[in-house]
Length: 176
Image: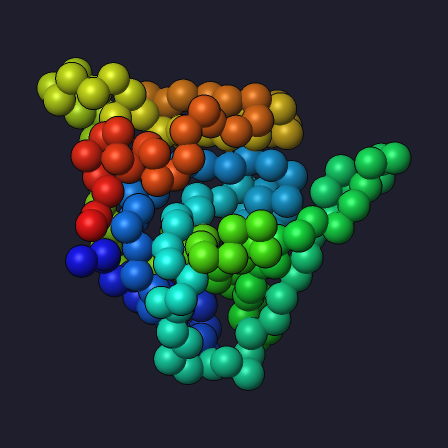
């Protein structure tokens, strides 16, 4: 059974839940969009089944934002993904993209359910390589002043080689 993730915005006006096979918050995105809409360093996005998303309260408060990629360049464009946030307190709740309509990506910061933790010690004691390392993506977008989190990490200039689902399966964290 997938893990139920209960989430809410900061003011409590929006409450939702979703089912996730991939609930480990292991990947930090530092792209300019995630940094600007998510805060200081970026966002940690989980993955869940879009069909399971249930808005328990606050549907009328939800707002959607389609971000601008490569802003202020010749390549500037509106991205296909929509970020859903509370119109009262502006808390980012989840991301949905028409390219992967079966998925929804709740922001770990919006989840109230205690999430699984992968400790750095797992790297050496479980023999699974980088199981305890934070995966940091979009490093080419990170400004020099922004500091990576402490502890073991794998840093990618763009995206990691494996998807969120592949990472969970590789490290024995996929929830059937």
